Image 1 (cartoon, one colour):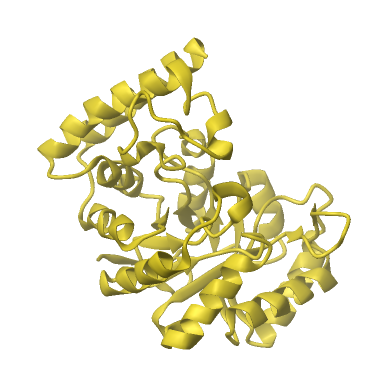
Image 2 (cartoon, one colour; image 1 turned 90 degrees about the vertical axis):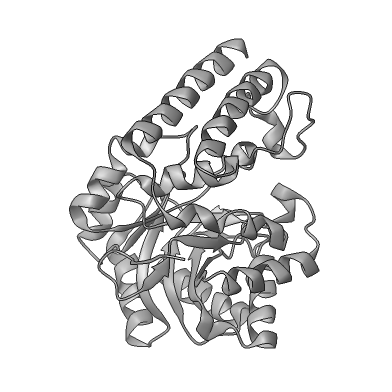
Length: 319
C-alpha cells in the first residue's frame, strides 16, 4: 500500500480509503455485519489506514457499528478516522440540514459517543447549507479544535466558490466529491482549485455505485435506488456492459481487474489523495487494493476515459 499526505495536514493516509456508506440500509439494504467486520480487518492487513463514515449513514448506525468494532478489537489507533455532519436526523419531522454553532457541537459529541473515541482526525461538512453561516461554522470548529476533539476539517460535495467562502473563515483541509469514469464533472473546476490550494481530495464512488466493478451482465437486475438511474437498467445498462467488457480487455493487458482499472484511473489524477471504496466482505477489499500500487500511463488513462465518455453518451441517448 502506498501512502500520501492529506493536503496541508499532518495526516499520512493510504491511497485507498475504506468507506462505510454501505452501512446505510435505506440506500443499500441490509448488510450482514460479520463479513463487513472481516473486511475492515482485511483492509488493515492490506495496509489501509484510512476510514471514512458519516453520522447520516443509517442515522448513526454506521458510526455505532464502527465504534463497536474499534473498541472490541482495539483498532482506533490503527486508523485515520474521518466522519461527517450536516443532516439533523434526530427530530420526528425528519431530516434537514443544520450547520449552526450549537448543532455542530452536539453532532460532534454524538459522533464521538457512537464511535467510542475521544477525537476525530477529519471532520467534514457533508454538503452545502443554502443558508450557511461560515463564521458560525468556524466558531464551532475553533471550539472543537481547542478542546482536542477534532484535528482537521474538510467539506464534501462543495464547489470552488463554496470552499472559498468557508476558507475565509477556517482552513479547508479536504474535499470529498464523487469522481469516476462516468462522473468527471469535478475535473474542470474543483480538482484544479484543490491542486492550487493544496487541499486534499478523497473521492467517493470510484466504481460508480458498483457498476464499474465488472460483475454485472447486460441482463442483470440491479436492485435498490441505483436501479432508477438510466445506466443501471434497460438499453443503457446493455451499452455500459459492452463498454465494460472492452475495458476488461485493457485491464487484463495490465494484469488488473475491471474494478482495479477503474480505481487506478481515479488515483492517476494528481489531485486525488485517496479513493474511497465501500466493501461488504473481505474479497471486495482484496480485489481493490492492488489499484494503489501504480498509476496509468497518459495513453491508457485517456483510452479508458474516452471509451466510457462515448458509452455514457450513447446510453443516455438510448434512455
